[in-house]
Image (cartoon, rainbow, N blue to C red; front, side, top):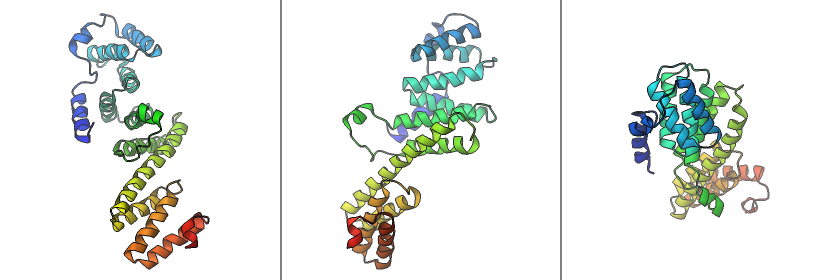
Length: 251
């Protein structure tokens, strides 16, 4: 899905929280909000996420201002995430944050939005095949990183903080690999200035990381090609200090 298409999907998702049409909602029994909520929770516990979405959407539609309305929306966010419906999940998290800026569970909403964005970057078949797709658009990964950072900085005591920190480390590596793939792309096409700048960006914003050594190598090669002796020397000194056994250090 392209960024434009994703954006359109999000706009459409804002038109209604549920993503479930009226006929489907009508299939949900005519019960009290609490009774329906109990049914939805049972569906969630059993992994029946589409059924849970249908019931929760009905509650949200029939009882929009009820005492459990916020919890219904929080559970809907989770159900959308588990069902793989990123567009509806992101639309609902954005809506919840906009309408409830002081809610007690905002740490959870930011955390879930990060998980949804992270999920859009994953591909089970590529992961199983060992295919590294570092060249994919990292926009969703960047958005996830920002939300996880909010959890850590604004809600340091949150029960999601520890996991948020670990996920940030993984995303940091993902973003560094993306920048490295772009740097190599430019280097291959002899766009040395652009390649060197990408390498510098990795060193400045993603160090320490496994990609830092490769980034410094690219910088040295590019500066050498451009005749920028001082910059080449500086990059080589950093490489020697951090990676003394690198083959370029002895050259």
